[in-house]
Image (cartoon, rainbow, N blue to C red; front, side, top):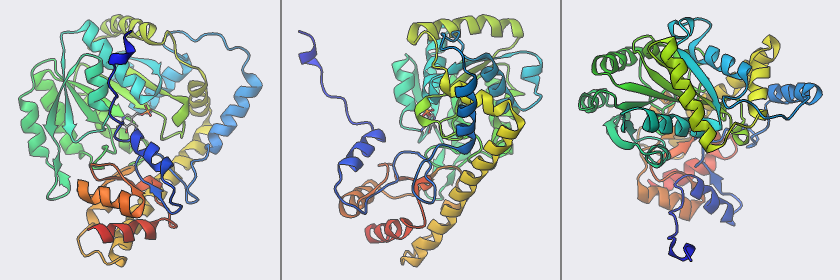
Length: 397
Ligand code: PMP
């Protein structure tokens, strides 16, 4: 008998919240926990461009044979174009290799395990705060996580000096997890000047950036959101990118993302890729096809790509609109505290500054579910639920 010794795992801080939400009998409850985009009707529909790509696949797909370990070849090519643009030093020099992965999570896990098995690096620096699953993924793969300063709670802004100061203590070969855009949970991104300084620091100290790029197109735009990544990639010899299409294609349950490794030379990239593939083989052998075929069908056909860009712009603009409405509605609900910082944050989330007791009161007394850190999914707000949310917040402040 071995299972009798197993102790229960703590509920996941974000997905556990969804379970509690589902079990809540109140009809006016609102879930602003997990990062899922909802439209004005509160739905998360399949994008039209995705439906069109699926119609093409249904008509044209002629085999369900295994993919190669690295996934769909065309997919890996279009991923690199999206990350680095039409032309970039790392792609021109063939220093980037990409493998399809099951979501951003799968990409992060493959990246971390590849590093542990094949390099001397054992430490990864993550921002304080960061996405709740980062430590979990990295430590399960055998890395030690350390935190760098990031958030200035008093001013609801970035504490960039603290970030640089922390990273000064990092050692050569340490990984640094950087949120490419739409920092989760704070919504506060680096400026291009700050990216430049981070790139200089990584280059000078021999730190290896690991970009978590889960929200490309949700901040300022597809190209704009990649500016930091493209700049840093031009400054350091080695980096890794774990990107996800869960949000920007709405392909949450298809589990589609990619891990891209940039090495100092094309030769080293090839060797490293052989080990990335070995890691994948030991985990799930080869990835599922459907999500990658959807993304590669859309991105390789100009008319479908344009349709997707339009749909992504609509999602981005609706979130921006909800940010403004949120700030206005809080004021209308009688909140005198300054929440204008919410309209300056980027992406799906707003880091509200609400404390644990207030978060708990929102849930218990008002059926409004947000993450314990005070993170609110603005992407789940609508004109309909906004008054409920804002009067609940006014009541708990
Ligand atoms: N990184 C960050 C910062 C995220 O917010 C998320 C999703 N919440 C992921 C990675 C994982 O994305 P996926 O669902 O594609 O695994």
